[in-house]
Image 1 (cartoon, helix red, strand yellow):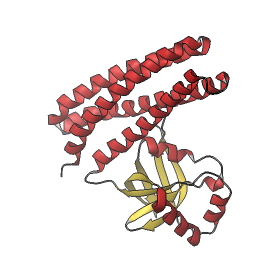
Image 2 (image 1 turned 180 degrees about the vertical axis):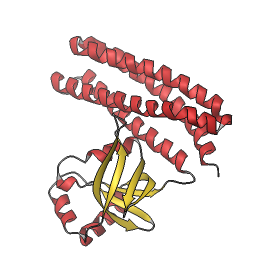
Image 3 (image 1 turned 90 degrees about the vertical axis):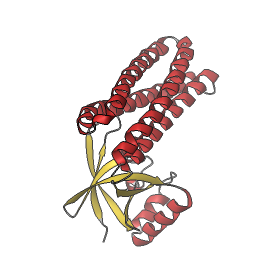
Image 4 (image 1 turned 30 degrees about the vertical axis):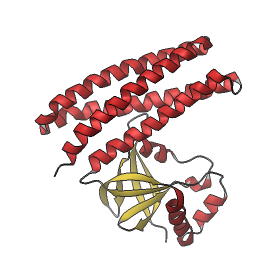
Length: 253
């Protein structure tokens, strides 16, 4: 009999909770979920959501848990998916019907160490989105494909990244006042992070405006690339400071 749980993720762009029913298995004290999407060509939306924000909620047999999601890759992924296909042959059929490698995600309880792990996972997801956006700009500048196609791809990646970054910082801005009340020693760090959010938001707005200009004038591609490069530098410093100051304080017993 297939085991099912309710998985609630946070929308990567909207910041709105989304709940879906997914099959799961148990493995060494953790839960495994499988992004099969019934063998469809595209991964399910919940996978994209938890890549941006790996803190999720699961409900099993009427009990809810906060969990940290981690995508499993390589040989370990193959082993775990193979075991699931043996338990439930439908999963073998799902993989056979699609050319993508169906992802396996491990869910572990959010506890000590979870804050730092969560921040790093979120930042890794945003970093990957930004890297993909930079690659799309470079492809457009190099003229490696049809200009309309490259422009459409660039536009999609830019809007997706800008939306994810805005949603992440908006969520943090909503949480920071409560953290400052609960952890007065963090207030200087939180004040600095809030100011940096405002600076990043200004760059994000500039990026969106340049993207709109690019549609009418391809010459703005170099300006877009420069803004993305500046944003990359600013975000790396921001991520490092946040992980160093917030994570350890929140993880302390």
